[in-house]
Each structure stands twice: as structure tokens, then as C-alpha cells.
Length: 126
Image 1 (cartoon, rainbow, N blue to C red):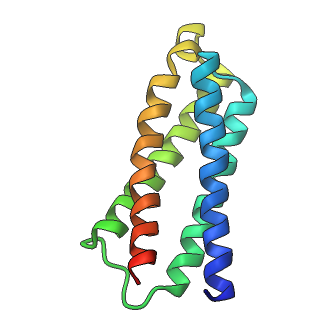
Image 2: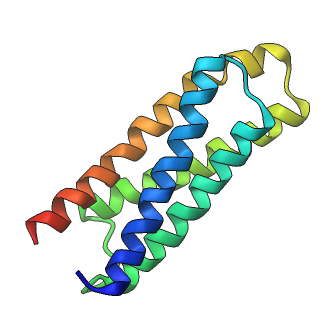
């Protein structure tokens, strides 16, 4: 494994760790707190960094027809929307929005796992 691949893998795994921490702690608390939002943003930023690093290693053009590329892009955009919405809810949202937010979080996290494990599979396959 090359150093750039190790760095990219660490960045993506840190994204998993922070995003999972935010999603699952929010789900257990059933109340959106500011530190959950910070974990969402941290996970998103690690994911963008890891995706950028992986893209630099990729051979060939950027192609949304590839399933891994498509699912990765969908997941990134959902994570961005999720973090933006969470930020808005913690600043201006109602108590009902703060207590029900965890339903959307789990959906985004599950979608994000598809490209994470898909990329792992592709990497192991060679």
C-alpha cells in the first residue's frame, strides 16, 4: 500500500468515525446538540478530504456512470445537506425539530455506508 493510499484511507475512516459518533450519539440522546453538529461537519470535512485524496489516486476520468462514483457523490451531497440542516435546526429550529432530527441522520449515515464499504471492496479486489 502506498503512502497516498494510506493517507486517503485514514481520512475516509476518520470521516466514518466522526460521522458515526455524531449520528449514533444524537440517536441515543434523541435530541440534536451543537456538538453533534460539530461531529457531522468534522465527518463531512474528512470525507471531502479523503474523497479528494482518493480521486488523485484514481486512474481515468471522473465518471458518474460508475456506481461507486455515483453513490459517493450522492452521499457527499446528502452529508452536506444534513450538516447544513442540523446547523439551522440547532440555531433556529423548534424543539420538535431537535427531537425528531435523528430519523434523517440515520438515513444519511446508511446511504454513506454504501460508498464506504463499496470502496473497501473495490480496494481489496485490486
